Length: 258
Length: 279
Image (cartoon, rainbow over all chains, first blue to last red; front, side, top):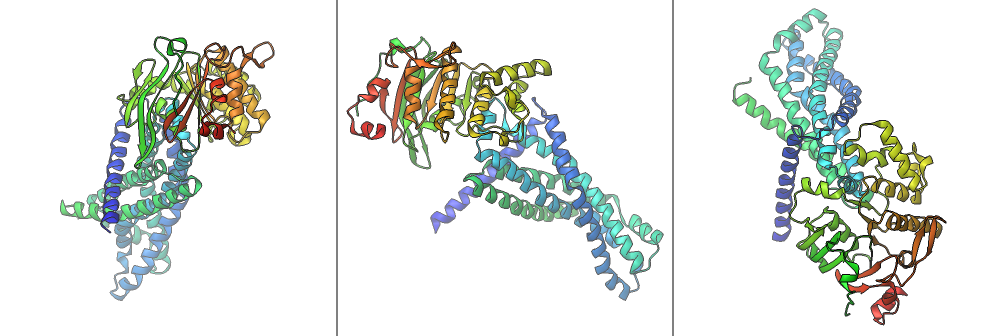
């Protein structure tokens, strides 16, 4: 038992160490040459535009279901006019950033892990190093910066679609006018809410991209290994998003963003 | 088994392009290489033989600096790679080319982009010059017509040949081959052998060839490339000191050097393990 627990602890510590090293070397690569700007642009397209349809869809229905669920409670107190506020605060502070990150993680952490994992098991990563290219610069850094660019923008769009979804429910179920809904949504949002909603995507972007890259680079065992790496990347990325969301929210509330 | 050491003065240039000194390596407490030493001189060929898991591919990765040994030195043109950081190793790798077992072509890039890869990394921006050089390299391996194809559209033999073209783009003085003919039919394997010999005899590169196929190893030891017939022709000598091919054989057993010598010495060895290995 001690052997198993000891091995597990050692592996976890090693994984955290290697992940931290991956993060700092990727950050350093942005300010030293060579820089692979074309690869970064391509990844921004794949991660950003590629995720756009699903993010907009999820945002829309999240806003709609938030309005649906809160309408019944608010109508008991005759406060359906607050629907805009509720949807705005829920989407911008929490659901927009987290659900967008989860969607992007499901789509892109898995894609990154499987792509890099396939390269790892077929010796393409070794070939890259043999041909004089640093795989971290070529593969990891562009994906990190592409996700850092794309995820906050996707979050903003998701928030907006959530508000649109909430508006449609508010107007159809609660019979609010459009101006009532949008005015209460706009009034509810304060600077701190937007900061909270926009700080989180940057942390989540690091998680989504680097978790995928980490599991991809550590893939062993052929095609079965690629499958395992892909699954682990999604599970770990999603778990870390929730964990980090809790601590970031707690920290921002503690320093006065409420 | 007593290993026979050839006269190093006959084989080695003053600074051999490749030299390993007392290299040992283990993975997860399993000893993969145990105190291995050898030299490969300029224009010479070393054929690495051994059963699966005897450490042959690990040796190639050590020479490239992709992994570091637990002990010993890996010298390329006299410089020890072991203490060097990755950024300095990148410069040394330009002197070397490697052909991986399945080719390891980048499957999202076309044949053209695969072969051009190193040239682009080295800063070549002139597309016309790039294309000219890529065509030249593909012509060397007789695959100029596959320029626009993707690796998935190529046969196994074609992928190995494209991998050779990619590996020689920067005109390396040392070529490493990891089972270049594995899984290929005899005719395609012979085509690969012709290319390896062509690089050795025309470009005078030093070669390290990992192989399980003794027929291919003997072909490299006993034949040279003839530009007139564009094929292999019998070499003078026994593949050893007096041979045009300057080929030696290194047999690994349990990670240690078990045999070192010429093709003739290997064939005539009385050792039971070698007899069984060569059977």
